[in-house]
Length: 217
Image 1 (tube, rainbow, N blue to C red):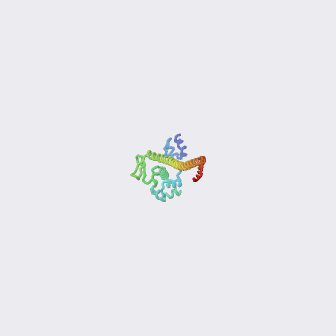
Image 2: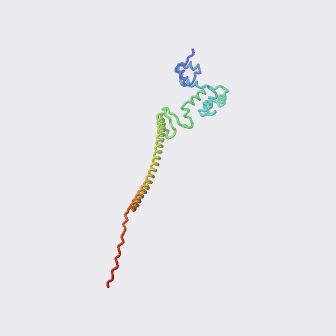
Image 3: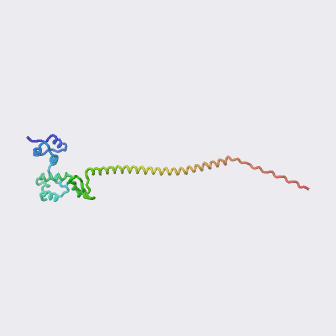
């Protein structure tokens, strides 16, 4: 009787949209299939997928042939569909392309590596080492800095608006001071005019001229 994967393993296949394709694997890994075994059945080994995986690793045909210890002509035959691609060769490229260590080989991460202690080591700045917790803290700080910058920008805008409003109020205050002064002058002038209009005019009576005295004989 053929051995089958356990119910939980079958569920894991189903959740990852993968089907068990090998009766040999079902027999060798009775019940429980490790995750790396499940992933090995995710793709069919085709020339197109082999080329895709090679390009994921940023290798040209010559580099890939040298890495696999085969001649480039053999690699060309694999990728051209002229002969069957060994599963081991394809699986190696797949595992490498999905492996974090291989991804760290990207040109942008030149010299970076993960140490045996699980730290991300930088070749720059005195070979700094970062734990996952430190990287998460740095990421959080960046998010917090962005939030604070937005708040600063908001406050700066509010301050500029307040300063502009204050300038307008000062200008209005100065203008109002001039207006108040003009009103004050108008009131004083009105008061003077009113006083002049109501002032009593006292007529001056001319004095009678004295009659000439008669000459005495």
